[in-house]
Length: 114
Image (cartoon, rainbow, N blue to C red):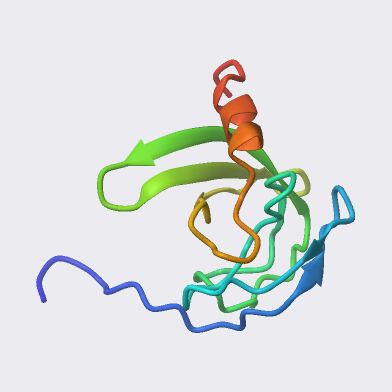
């Protein structure tokens, strides 16, 4: 392989309670790691590398924008309310058990530029 690292999810895929809306969030069913609430799209700043749960910030990550990637599909842009870190997470619209809410994704995409 040339020109970069290959993405590998190394973390855990555990259920959690959303720190923003209180929803009970189940693990993803597609082999990836769930990193945001499917109800409100908020996340928690817990990763340094995707899925590693090694970040000590633990601030609430607010969805501030939505982007479309030809390779990855819809991406949710999150900004940490505590430290200001900005990251992107793939939307989980195809999860058979608990998919991300399309209407909330549309609401985030309609917000003014962050």
